[in-house]
Length: 269
Image 1 (spheres, rainbow, N blue to C red):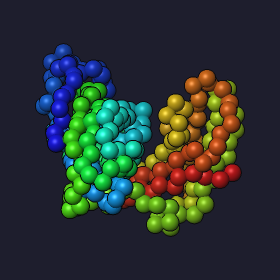
Image 2: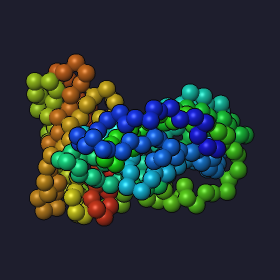
Image 3: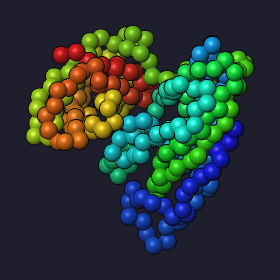
């Protein structure tokens, strides 16, 4: 159940900083290995598999919302025999600051659990592409072809189970209170001010605001803690760059700190 092919030239395609003439370039095989973990059947219509990403020391990859200094990790299926849908369960990420840019992701090895909705009781087969970025002093966008079987066996994989347990807490688990979003129009979209009553999550607290439509861009949220409240402001910009009707339930709000992360999901008016 390993990757079938890797597509990348040997040159780094992006730079975080200007590099000296003596800078070393890397090939993908030197810094990352990606494989599909076949996983186990949860019940009659769900299967938990995973993608394992092994990184060389000092390298990192990115979360679903990578920040302005990162590259989003995206899985696209091209074959799904016996599978009707999927969802990635993202482990708790870290926040990195490099040359004034914030990025959100993972160092070292990371396992991304992938839950599949099944349309068969037997073995299923999947294939697809994983697009991701890996960074150290240089950043490389990589596309990996993945494929394999999802067996009907029910013996749990401990590594996948551990990755599932390292998820952000729900609002109820964290003891979070109300979350409100005040919305005002700006020239190219909307400005959202989020007020969230959430316990301290540790140092370098970061609030991330996402829109469920990937075509709608959301800026990095800028804010601060005021006692038991986090207050942050983000701009939400659609493809046509103008004010639009925002459904607050389409916003996903995550708070990430050094000790824990909390998924707050949508907000009220």
